[in-house]
Image (cartoon, rainbow, N blue to C red):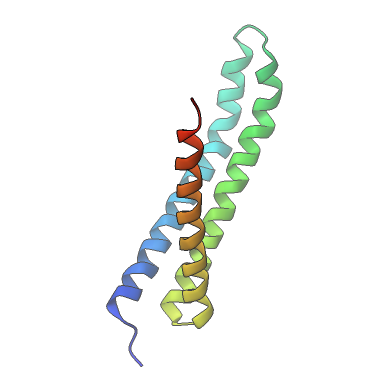
Length: 109
């Protein structure tokens, strides 16, 4: 059975998203020490002590997102049922997150 064009497009877009997440993760890994060194030249603040672990955690989160995107892209590309359901679940999670974020911002007054 031939894969539908729309599913192929979704797989390619997920792979591109995964590549972008890898680039952002590498940005934090490579430039993290530079940012930390620049922060050390400024006056001492409590935020400086948490900066290095925070940059490391951010890069790890982006690498996890990249792995998820690549897994979804593989599942969609191969036509696996789990790939489609994983994509739908992540899409639903994104929609719920969007609504939760909007609701939270409306109650910030």
